[in-house]
Amino acid sequence: MSKEQPESAISRRSFLSAGVAAASGAVALTTNVSGQTVPSIGGSGKSAGLKYRAFVRHGTTGSIELLTMRQITGRQVLVRNQAASCTYGDVGAVLGTGGNFNRPTIVGNGSVGIVEEVGPEVQAVRVGDRVIVAVTPQCGRCDYCLRGLAGLCQAVDVPLAEIAETADGTPVIQFGWAGGKGGLAEYTVVYEELVIPVFTDLPPEQLAFLIFLGAHGYASVANNAPPTPGADVVVFGAGPTGLSAIQAARLHGAARIIAVEPIPARREMAMKVGATHVVDPNEDSANLVERLRALCRIRNDRPLAGGRGLDPNFGTRSDGPSLIVEAVGADSPDFPPKIAGPDPKGLLPLQQMWDLCPPGGHIMTQGTGYPRNSRISVPASEWADGGKSKHSMNSSGVHSHHDIPLLIKMVENKHYEVASLISGTYRLEHVKDCYQAIADRSVIAVSVVFT
Image 1 (cartoon, rainbow, N blue to C red):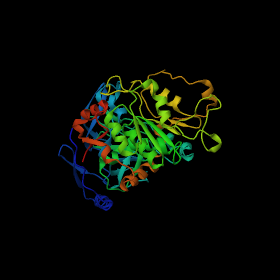
Image 2: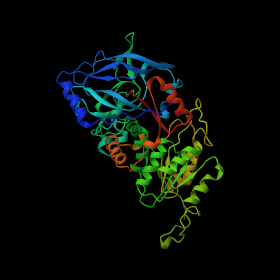
Image 3: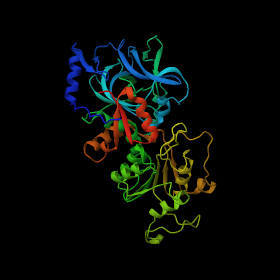
Image 4: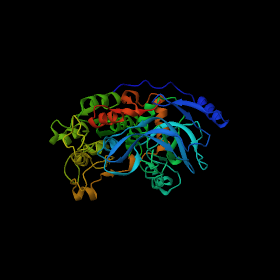
């Protein structure tokens, strides 16, 4: 793996100039990762027949294939990708353990790129815009969006679109909800509810981090039960999502931010981006809850003087964090990490979070991959009357069209760190190496780049 140099900054004016040139009949040229010249087709209305490369999964195997684009229509947007967001959730799909795909499917989640063509019904973006293709849509019109719950936007129900064909004419779809995204391709076609115009010169790999890992980690703290200044926050997992949650806790003024993480390099990074304490869950795992509770202990034990004494329901001290964020999930049994936590299934951390949470505290979970029908134990008295609040929002409850531009602004003004979290970038032809590194947990964040 080698760290690619970020592309040179491109101004908003140059984007618009390119769009004007295309609209006037000129055809701009760009170079793909093979060194081939690819026409920039913005405004020409000729997406049909465009040849491009994509990582396609069919059956139980995946490979890079040359596809032929179909004509876009309706609310579809054609984006020439600059970089793709790469996450642990796609490891199986890329490396071959993610089940049997009965249709050729372009794999990948969100991406960042340039709008090359828009369908006749598109209103939000223009040819030449630099955009982020989000993981979660935000239509702004469904019941959930209108109630401030954009993470549950009903635009996810858009059917998968057949956007291209293989060499033998077989239709190709893209992976994911909201019509599919397929970020591991030189071009992607998505519905406009997923597309966010961004006006920034940040390099593609930094924007790619914000799409999923950054936005979801931030939302897990900011959008559900944000801590008040001076609060204590515990984050289980200091991978890229957890590191983003740590930064969000810092931005909200948390006094103590405790990262629970087995990998030393990630504990070190947690301290650099805002954690005040780090704890290895593999050390004295049986007493982890008490160790964390002790770190959150309030020295004032006089309730009538602003302190905290015994819990009247259970007769024990009610010390603990105001917010607990889960950023662990379960390890894939096919790709065990080089340094694992005490429970690869991820159930022990969930149990520890519940036990650690004091009355009045909040737990935010977002992990995936837990074994079907697995259980943790919750006392009925605590469930019914324990004062603990459990939040489980799709994609952490991220409001993509609001949160991602906000994060971009914070990165630009150096309030939120991204550059040091990016371990490197890969070209499309090395996509399996990219995801193997993610599976091994030998990197923090990586992306596939096309420019």
